[in-house]
Amino acid sequence: MTDVQRYARDCFRGVTSDRLGVELEFLVFDADNPMLPVPIARIAGALPTLTGGSRVTFEPGGQLELSAPPDVLPVAVARLTADVDAVRLALARAGLRLGGRGLDTLRPAVRQLREPRYEAMAAFLERPHGLTMMCSTASIQVNLDFGADPRARWERAHALGPVLVAAFANSPFDGWASGRQAVWGRLDPSRTAPVARNFDGRGDPVGDWARYLLDARLMLVRGSGGLRPVLDGSAFRDFARVAGRPPGEADLAYHATTLFPPVRPRGWLEVRYLDAQGAAEWPVCVAVVHALVTDDRAAAIAMEAARPVAHRWADAARLGLADPGLRRSASACFRAAAEALPRLGAEPALVARVRAFASRHIESGRSPAADQMEEILA
Image (cartoon, rainbow, N blue to C red; front, side, top):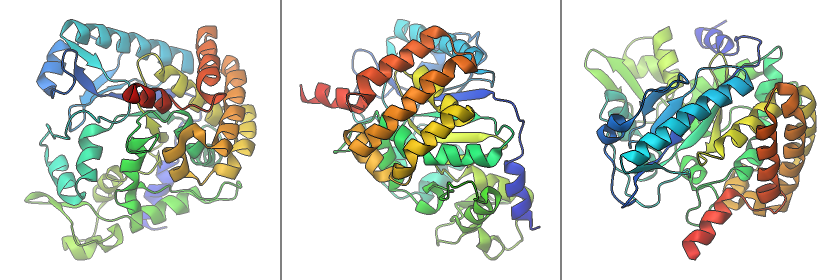
């Protein structure tokens, strides 16, 4: 077994429980003038103590990220809800507000963080889409344990991607329901394309991930002079030629952090394809993803519904739920999720919110982006 295969195998070795971890990104705006840039220092200075245990970080453009520690569904949602509410109120007192969409279309992309990693990333990624991705997008990342059958959950997270992208499309721009996904789709496909393409239960997740790691373009190498971007199109399999030395385990692990596929294995599942939602809507997004991937009964229904559209990533981002096939699949998936959530310990209020979201958006064929588009045109 090669070092890459060994590393890929280890990425699928995790605990067999059903914990949930959530990372919420928010664009932050000046309440009086949303077209003004907001310095990170102003946001950080307004933040309260977070009793729910969320970790606070910032993305290169100043996007605020709250990362909740993993726990069972009701506990994870309750703790993160408390932290989001505390942040929202504290920022409001400072004249700031949390954004409720996945793409900043009001302000130009300006990078605030100048860490070496971001310097190398900015040099590697082509403008303007690379800068937009780094500085003007916001997402929800749902982290899930692999459970007893990692391959099943890996395939579910991929196959359900287009349906969930359409259902939660929340960044309208230039004719796309998910402008954020459109931005990602215009970046280097060797690091943003889906890893899994086979959903029949016979795929090879470890082998697929190992090949993905080797074939992805090498973004940077670390040497005595720090991080150096690699701009000649070399893949990771060319590391020894580019760096003048064979890659070590740390080089491979770091390379993996520069890859952004829709689903990424890291000892748990990272579901990375969801647009940011408003402070009131993100629990619905998190609960539906968790239910459809981890509950076997719900997953069986959802996978049957999603298979006809499982490869329609671009259509999902452009059309959202206006596409009849995606809407039909989403309707079946949301019904399955709502039925599964009580089995997963969800509070009745959360189940009711999922059903209300389905009634407003799924059954009507109106992704959240549709409401924003109407506001823009009004």
